[in-house]
Structure formats: C-alpha cells, structure tokens
Length: 170
Image 1 (cartoon, helix red, strand yellow):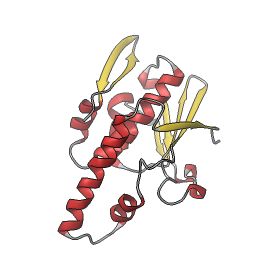
Image 2 (cartoon, rainbow, N blue to C red):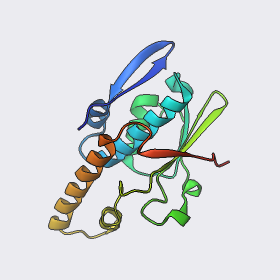
Image 3 (tube, rainbow, N blue to C red):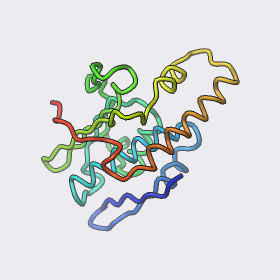
Image 4 (cartoon, rainbow, N blue to C red):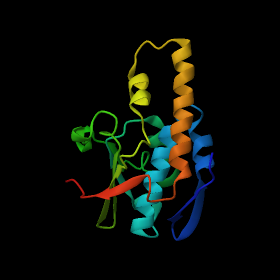
C-alpha cells in the first residue's frame, strides 16, 4: 500500500493514521473499500481543515465494510452513531459502476459532499464480479486481483484527485 497520512484531532490532540493502519484494523477482505473511505475522508478533512474526529458526521451511499471500518477507526463515527449508509445518496444517473461512491461529511455546520471521479478508478468488471452471487474459486482469485488493482489506483493519486466535490444533497 501507498503510505498516506490523515490527521484528525481528539480533545485538541492530533492523531495520525496511515492507510496501512486502517487496512490492518479492517483486515484483508476489502482493501478497496478501505482505500475509498480513506481517500474520501482525506479529501473532506483537506476541505474542512482540522477536525475533532468525534464531531464529524458521515453519510454515504457506499455500503462496503472496508469504507465503514475506515470511518470507524479514524472518526469513531460508527460507534458514535454518526455514520449512516443512505442508499438515497446514490447517483444512478452515473451508472451502476459509480452510483454508490458518494460521501457527505458534516462538521460544525459545514458540509462537504464528494463523489468518485469518473476516469477509470472503479471498473465495470470489478462491480459485476463483486455482485456475482456464486463465484467460482478462479473468479474469487480474479476479484482479489481487481480489488488490489483498484486500491493501488486510488492510493497512487494525491488527495483531491480520487473524489471530487459536489453540491451537498439534503
């Protein structure tokens, strides 16, 4: 993984997280989801400035466990009841591949809404294979490769080049 740092605050004390920290917390299952959550949070924090982690509220159309675990580790938003998976945030007009990669971060009266950039970060093949119910062993192995490739694409880009800011939904 590409080492990247995200800094948040708790009671005024800075806490630094690397994507590797979050990946270890989550485990091996969904590295792409970890990368999505980490990239979205990094972009939001860059726009919001220094944030007290336990005051950030997160809504997303992204239901993946890797993204959820990234938000939990960095912001403690799941256990703090400040994390909601909201399918209504999805943008179906962007197609099945991109529709659910939407994140909304609320902090002290400010809101940052982000969606994945539409330039090949997530592939149709990855989405289709991930949704397939009865994958073969070979398909599972190929899906693992696709997950790693997507993770590498996401983490190779600087903050602000994975997700783009959009108008905040209600």
